[in-house]
Length: 416
Image 1 (cartoon, rainbow, N blue to C red):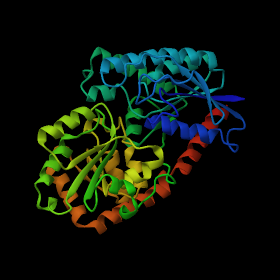
Image 2 (cartoon, rainbow, N blue to C red):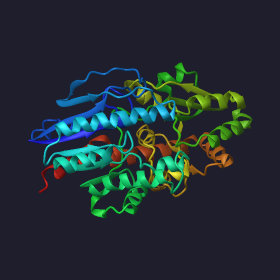
Image 3 (tube, rainbow, N blue to C red):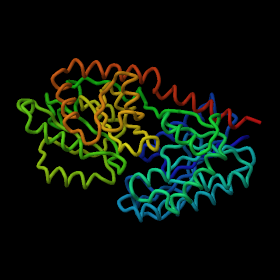
Image 4 (cartoon, rainbow, N blue to C red):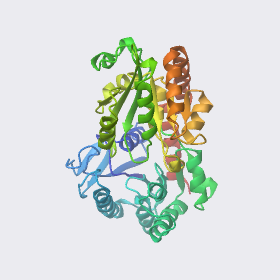
């Protein structure tokens, strides 16, 4: 029996986006229809995304898959040095476990948390005769260069880039999240036949449109009839927030703010959340509200609490990262207000499906104008939201994505 071995630092029951996506694929493979001839394993850490001190069991089962959890340091996500030590210690422990598990012909699926885990997995696959599939959620070290953590063309940049390229070129398949990312992977010298574009997805049965009058969270949070602009998910270093804060400042003194007005609703956690709260206080923005992550069973209400949702990405990150929050927004039947590159992946999807509006970073006037337009024309906001949901049902729904993933992995597992 062939083994499919997944490697990712976080896994169910964790709420990290990569953990939830991986859990969906594992569950699909373990279903009676697709898992009869495959043995599924997951290598993850004992950490939790939101609680680095958590101590998850070393071994367990998830829908029949055997889950192996490795030791790692537990400094958490707040400091870069601590994150680096957590990543390195997990990579070494995970690859030792992979050495014991992998056999000739097995398929090893390496995600990109931590960065470069695929490079070590590639060495193990070569030694064990296994096949490698790279599930590229972000492209490292390009992300670090764009953030200024690594200097362009420095020794570290060239060395880490060479390690990444080895893994990309050795892999049977590299799965990219969008066309821009696929182009970057091709630029690393990977043959087009080894690159597959597979968008992330959303559970469109769990997340569905919900009328504001029927949403208990809107009442609980005192949103009443205000036009609510949401941001839901990770407040990370790759996202752009200054334009959003300036737009909120402009709208705070706008005539539209009289009466019900506009409210910004920020839900989630991340490395930049505390700094964002400080900036809101410095600017005296009373029209911004913060809420914690909501339980999975309340995700529909949480996403539907906003009338439109913000998605942001630094332009230098295009092709390195694709914000997965877009798919949840679309499933909730809400328009997306994207702050980023007008030629970027999310901007392209918004134009393709006619389900949102794009503003350039630094152009807060344009973002504020888009918000004013949707707030004054609720029917237009609803139209864009309906288009978003239609795109979800046609292209980004969970059953469609998982069928594609199962077919891809079975093909790799059984190829000569």
